[in-house]
Amino acid sequence: MPVSGKTASAIIRTLGGPALPAEWQTGIGLPVDVGGVGPGPTLVNFTYQEDRKMGMIQDIFAIIKGYEEPDRYVILGNHRDAWTYGAVDPNSGTSALLDIARRLGIMLQSGWTPRRTIILCSWDAEEFGMIGSTEWVEENLEDLHSKAVAYLNVDCAVQGIGLFAGSTPQLDNLLVDVTRQVKDPDVEGKTVHDTWNKMTGGINIERLARTDSDFAPFLHHAGIPCVDLYYGKEFPGYHTALDSYHWMEKHGDPLFLRHVAIVEIWGLLAIRLADDPVLPFDYQAYASQLQEHANTFSTMMENSKWVNLLNRSIEDLSDAGIEFLKEAKKLQDLNISDGYSLMRRRLLNDRLLLAERSFLQSDGLQGRGWFKHLLYSPPEDYESKLSFFPGVADAISRWDNRSTKEQQAAVRHEVWKISRAIQRAADVLRGEFSNRNESLYTSVSVAP
Image 1 (cartoon, rainbow, N blue to C red):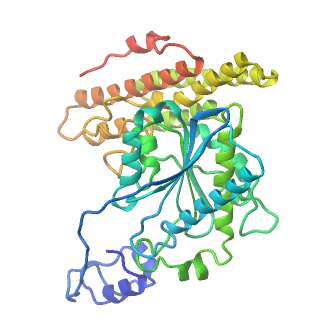
Image 2 (image 1 turned 45 degrees about the vertical axis):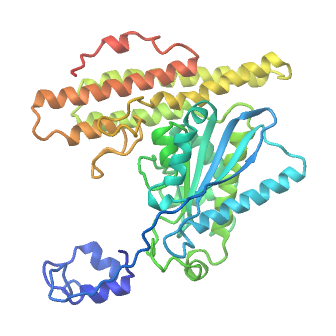
Image 3 (image 1 turned 90 degrees about the vertical axis):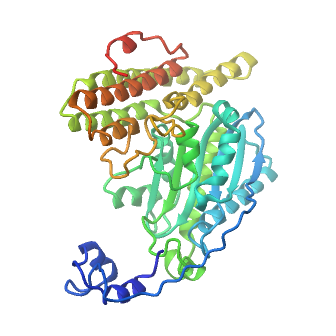
């Protein structure tokens, strides 16, 4: 049960046992020689009250139908259930979603209509394990597989200073471009991009291999490109009664300008994805990120020859991404008004839309079938050194009680599955069948 630093300090001062870890001492401001981690001698009277009952949950949706492609969905979501007062988690995000709805309403009144459909989602029961969003994704999985463009998530919109963002790699460049258009809420005369770049020593975009918010079912289960946005790395009052409007007004965002910045980034992302004639996805950037992953994995495996297969599939994805950009450029240069050209553009966009689905394994990760994304599902061992390629991470974490030959066979098999998935994505981008490169399937020996 989370408690305040003041309460923690009072308890720890009276405990014996081993000395406190250094980060605990810093976190609650205790001297080095004060307190311990227990046991005893103090006895703390701890009372926890819970209302345990069955309840009905309700997801709420607002839909703005697109005029050209009403069956292509750009989805924005935030959950509205909270453990306590929830000013940060989730009401900062809920207020941002409501402001986006207000702004989109003004645009509609002025005569604007999106090219593709925009869906605004208010999820229930997120704090119980993303239940509201997960049930909806599972219930509508077939439609989402064929029609969802992207899911844009904001949970705790504001919990401190500085922008933090995560995404699937094809959305990286779009995210960076949008932050160049938004005024920084804390530094006069700067954009969000300027301060984001300076704060982290370069743009740092997280990969979404965690399961602590509503993007999880969209990415890990359905293979839909995702973005997650928030201000402030950590919040000390997380899931406590300290998560109050008073804290937000006095400490978190006194002028509520960070809220405005999140609204503008979130909204501009949605409008670009809904209105750009050709979807602003960059699979060359995706391939570059995968190459970084492969290099990290190669170092871990001491430059194993298994990585050669992975490198070949990534190189092919990069080539497919370059070819696609050239094809899209030719199409954009044309004056598209006739039905044939519109259909060509739609088919082009569908290849972009479906490429991320190629990274799904239909039967899921071994022993964890619900998680189907071979690149960015969470690893079984949350202390894993790999924040990508979860099947490989799981195979490594299960090495105990296996022979060296069995260990190598398990990892090699996972590398083969990842390589095959990346090759599928390259073929989808080209609009070709997934068996285009037969050598991928026959060049590696796979143990059961």
